[in-house]
Image (cartoon, one colour):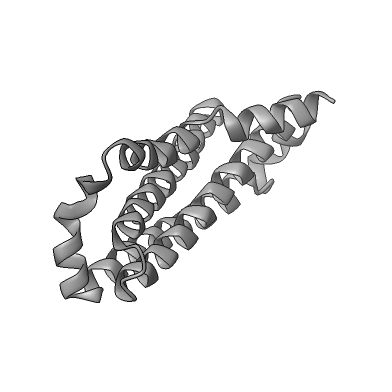
Length: 153
């Protein structure tokens, strides 16, 4: 039961969710805030594709860092005996999942703006996806730095 509780807490009480919801909350109260990015994105789809590519790059970086973080090779075999290793693993996988969702949101948002299907919502979704992917990438990178300190690498 505590694993399920920890999983739900990690998903719903997380900086990734906060940074994903901030642009959507701003859009709910002030829908025209995304108007400043509408013109550059509607003029050139390359702008949106670059933003989507940025989130995909963060996804690739997160995959590499998460794989290195959770691999139990060399001196890291002691981690399997660490009582908090399952929590670390779950949190890293959740952060990677947020990065995947951010990339999907960016790709969908680019399509929405390119097809002129609610472009302001699409721009908001793009910013939300970039924020959540960046926060997830930072979470994984900080976990990796902390683990290096603990293991003395």
